[in-house]
Amino acid sequence: MTTRETPTGSAPDDAFSADLLFTDGLPQMDDEVGYRGAVAARAAGITYRQLDYWARTELVEPTVRGASGSGSQRLYGFRDILVLKLVKRLLDTGISLQQIRTAVEQLRASGIRDLAGTTLMSDGASVYLCTSNDEVIDLVSRGQGVFGIAVGKVLREVESTLVDFDAQAPEVLDELAARRAVRTA
Image (cartoon, rainbow, N blue to C red; front, side, top):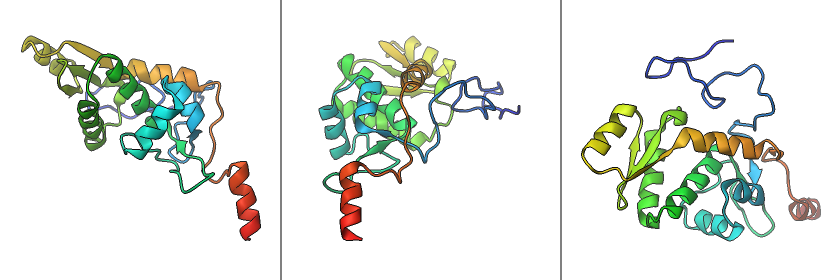
C-alpha cells in the first residue's frame, strides 16, 4: 500500500487522504457518489428544513447532484455532509450565519485536501481556518481563540455515521422522476 506525503511531511492516517486497499465499511468518499437529503441531514444532525434552506441560499449546495425541479433528489457528497456538520457545530456555539458563510467560503477557497489536520477557531465574532498547530497556538497566544473545532474529529464522526447508509450514484432516479422519464420518452 502506498500513501502520499502530506505537506507537513507525515503520512496521512485517515481514509480521506490515503489510498486505501481495504475500507472496512467506511462510507464512499468518491465525488461521483452521494447521499440523499434525508440521510445527509441525519448524518449532519440537522433538520431537513435546515438542509433545504442552506441549499437554496447556497450556503452548502450538494456537489453530486442538485435539485432540478419537482420530484428530483439532491445528492450530497461526503465533503458536503462534513461541511453541513461543521456549520451545525458553529451554529451551536453561537456564531452568526454570516460568519459561518465566510468560514465555508474560506474552506472552499483553500481547497484543503487534508481536512483531518484542520482546526476551525473562533473568538465568538470571527472564524479562523488553522492548518497547523503553530497557527492555533499563534491565534490563542494573541488572545483571539475562544474555541476550536477539530475538523478531523468531525470527519471521523461523519464517517462512522454514514457507515450504516448506502450511497447512490447520481444516475439513480427517485420513483417520481423515473415515472416522468418513462412518460416523456
